[in-house]
Length: 125
Image (tube, rainbow, N blue to C red; front, side, top):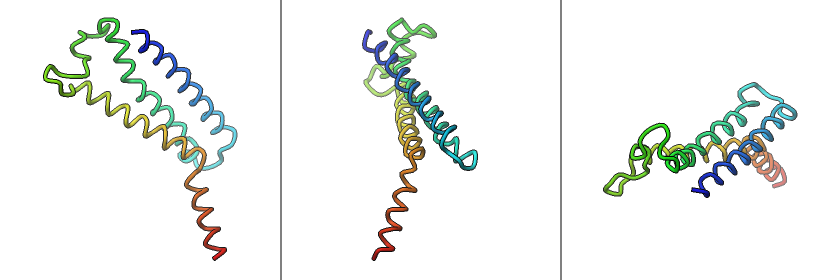
């Protein structure tokens, strides 16, 4: 029970800091079309929210379900297979982590930097 609460708290702090950092960088340094400018921030916000869904489910289960009976929030069915909630939380985590990674890569402009490096190497040949 303690670990779920600790993890949720740590997630809120880390993702809050990441969102703040990306927002500050976006407003201060990025100059481009609105979608290209705010795309990384949007992905980081959505990714952070999606990544916290499963740990929130755990915290709710630790407190008896709170919003519904605990059996409706369980990760697995009685036969050991993933429940619908389990599949949903799993998908949220995968999509959330993907959004976070793509948002940060987009923010620091890794594709543009790689293209520039490859283009410069082509010129020296």
